[in-house]
Each structure stands twice: as C-alpha cells, then as structure tokens.
Image (cartoon, rainbow, N blue to C red; front, side):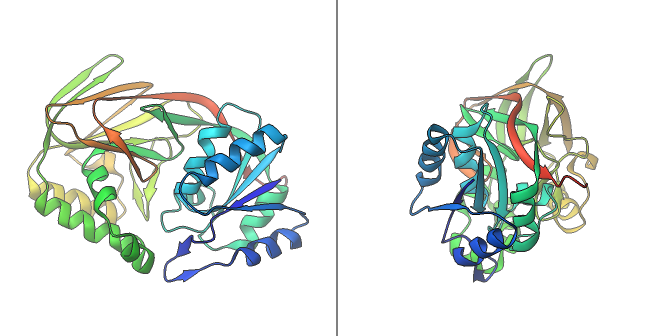
Length: 295
C-alpha cells in the first residue's frame, strides 16, 4: 500500500504527526510506503503515479480535500481507497464510523479491511464522494476562514452559515432533472451521495452510496426566518434536511443547474467553478475499504 499523508492536516486545535500514523500502521502489520503532500495538487499527482506503479491500495491520511484529489485519479480503477481521517470535515470518515484522529482503529481498517464498490458523484467533470452543492453552501465554503476552521472546527461553519443567512440573497435557479424541473428563487441545491454533510447535518435520510442514485436537496426561498430555522433544525438539532418544509428532495442520476447570474458550486468542500454545471453519478466507481473481515 501507499500512504499519501498531508502533514499540515489539522484536527481541531492540534496537528497529528505523520510518524504517529506510520507507527499505528506498523503496529497493525503493514510496511507502508509513505508520500507527503506539500501543496494543492500533490495528492492527485501521487495517486496517478501509484496507479501507474501498480499499487493495490492507497491510504489517505488527511482531510476531505486530500481524499477528493486522490479519487480523481483512482475512480473506475481496481485500486482501493482506505482513509485515516485527520481533517475538520471528515465526511467519509464519519460514514466509515471513524472519528478524526482515531489512529489505531483507522489503521486496522486500512490494513486489514475489505473493499467494496461505492458510487461517485460527478459535477462539472469533478468526482466527489460525499456531497456537492451550488448556491448558499458554496458561498459558505468559499468565505470560511481556514485558520478559524482549524481552531474551532465545525463551529466555524456554523458561524459562517449564520453570516451567510444574514447577508446573502436567494438566487433564481433553474434545475433540470431527468423527468422534472424546478425554477424560481432558491437558496441553493445540495447534492448528497452519503447521508452526512458534516458535523451532525444529515442531508437526506435515504441517501446511500451504493444505490446508483444521488439525492438532490432543493432549498427553496421561504424568507430568512425559515432559512435560519432550517439551519437550527439541521445543524443544532440534527434533523434530516428532507424533514424541513422549505426543502424538496429529488432522487435521480442527472441534474443541470443554471442561474440568471452565475453562482458558485463546490464538491466535497472545495470550490470548483460557477454555473451552469451538470451533475451525474458513476455507480460503483470507487473501491472503498469499509469493513473488517469479521464484521
């Protein structure tokens, strides 16, 4: 296996040393080759090199951004992905039942776990494993302070979300699905491949990463009071977004997003571009190490 490690990845308030990760992998029975990232794009380059070299499994020790870079290169290949989550978002780690910085458990899974195929979303040509979105959530991602996020974690997202609710305006979007369409004033649209969005936010209780479908959560414009209520219900109380009266969930394989004025869109917490953009799904495109043999 090859370990692609981001030495600058931070848990809330602290940094985990790469040496500690390697030690846990050694204790689990591995003899890993380790490659460090230095800047954006390194993880993708290293993953491409690993695929050419014939590595069977890549272990990502880092955050969601590092994972996202790697899946761009190993999607639709036999190469397996394991995760040792070290970031603040930890979307894929939460799906796997791994807390950020839980090195021993994550290392055992990375070394001894079995892989099974999961779906990947594709938005504007970029693969994503967890979520994507256009509108309000992309504005939050774009404007959040990275240093503040590293200090207080998901509280930084909560603070930025409140600021966005008070300062942003809804957008006129046109959403075209396979069999229906929506047009009008909206705060945005979330795209879920996994149920979890981050922290305790659940976008759609029915989202599954192996059903060949994406869950599109449309957040209609019902005024700022309803938007704030939506944020409290989902972020504070942990209610699924599809429970809220201001949201509509559409399951499908295709979505085109257009806007009167271009809006930003993101995948797995990284800003990638502006509308118009199309979103599709690639069933079973990623071999994810997700369970131990005795589970």
